[in-house]
Image (cartoon, rainbow, N blue to C red; front, side):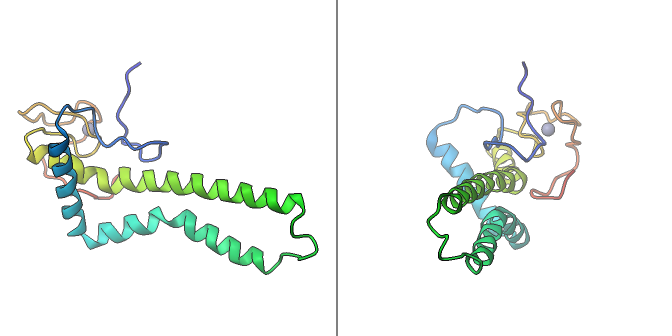
Length: 156
Ligand SMILES: [Zn+2]
């Protein structure tokens, strides 16, 4: 089974690009510069940050709303505690999924562009490794490569 690289942003784990064999120092340098360039884009930074904390905001609001309704005589009975454990589990899972989404959607293009700067061209849309002579379109996702792309752009 081929393992198609996603233009998909939702997933259990981050997959920023196809596997590459580079040493740790080079990998750290690529992520360092990807971070720097993302920091230079406040709009992208703000949007990705807001989206990545949605589950925590929702959970916090739910806790605040719930606390006002707790009947002290019933606090400590099992349904209440079970509900709390379930709510925390849903929150943590949701937080992980939203974080992966934000990284895949907004951070990944910066990383892919840095690989290109380091002489390892990559499709900024899907992370597919490209030959040095860039084709007109990504063979993996079909994204047009002839025009320069803005990392973090809104894409379908
Ligand atoms: Zn692609």
